[in-house]
Image 1 (spheres, helix red, strand yellow):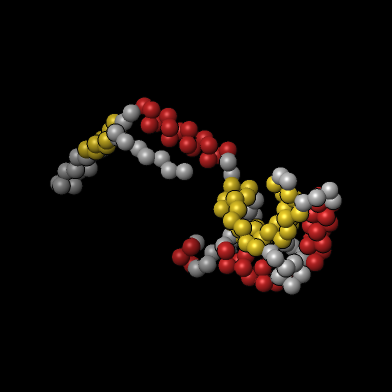
Image 2: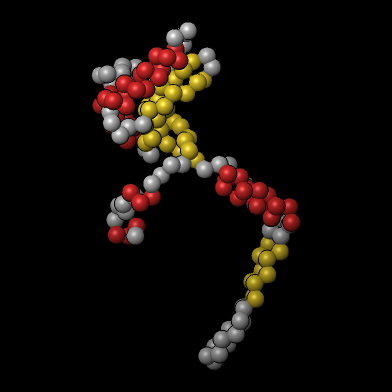
Length: 147
């Protein structure tokens, strides 16, 4: 979502005495009240919708009278075969889709896809936006610069 802000002007005045005495500056921001309301609305929307972009692997898209049961059976089979990997059943009328993983990058999804391809032929990587459920305590910086 992009937000264009028009008609906002900023003026900054500062007084500095080169003789070593510092005086306080004054900053005045002039802008349209409607722009402030739009920005506030954008902030509130982002706080309510807590999602992050990522990838999941679609293992199956099932239809028919037994599709729901087959989808949940497949979900359990995935959980048993690949511990630690989350599986999901999504109803996208008229199909039940079985998806696997919460991958941050397409490369992570592709690596896992190679592991499961023999058990689940026809799998594909899907772009996805899923609810943010990150355990920040498990995050490790890639380098000392990230600390």
